[in-house]
Length: 316
Image (tube, rainbow, N blue to C red; front, side):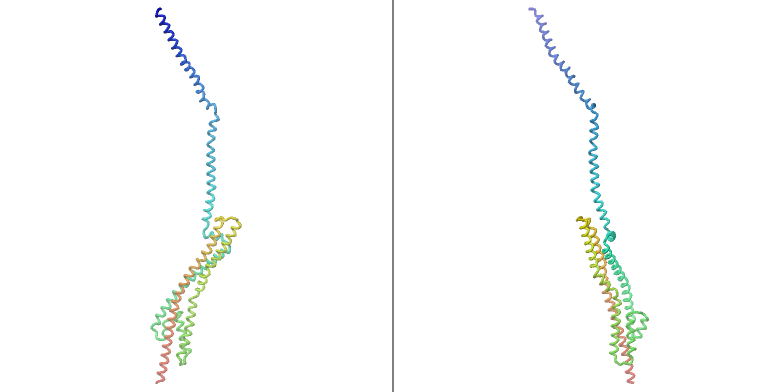
């Protein structure tokens, strides 16, 4: 057997086998582009669906609407706070007075007038007491070296002090008792006249202090009356409004308490001023007592001098 045909046959078979192996790979390459064509056609799908982008763009307004609703709710929630703050700012003493009941207004006006009277009395009495005390001290210094009623009266002049009144009463009693030898009776009658002058001076210097005592004692109770009336009106308002909210009750109670504040503002200065004037008038009346004693001593000297001269003439 010739080996060349055998070799040729083997080669042919080897070539056929190689061709058979290459044929599936080429078939896969042909099928792969065919499979890739649908995939490559899929990206065109979004282009074929134009409504999709508007749907995506339409979804954002929903959060915007919710944000607007939240802002509106925040504004609505802040309005009551602003209203309450405005109401609190309006609770000034003047606004409370204007919005108070007519009776509470009358109470506060009366207490304000009482406070004005208190301070008027304070200024007037301070000026009066300072003047009379200074004048009486100066008068006592002037008659310290006087030897008789006439000399003391000449030293004082025509001043309207308590000491000048006492000296005038002593001289009048000595003139009316001329020819009476009883010195004790003259001194007793003069002492009675001195006591009347001292009492009249005490009444004059204490003028207005009774009003201070009245204001200091009654003003708190008058203010308390206004407070009770205002609280009563507040409870009536609660019953009408059928609510227990503090914003409804607070204005009426504040107005009622303002009446109490007016009462205390009128009473406390009145009591302090009354106590101060009580001490000052007591000191002034002590000076008047000293002046009464000085006038009585001068009268006694005149009586002794008169009777001594009469006894000397009788002895001659």
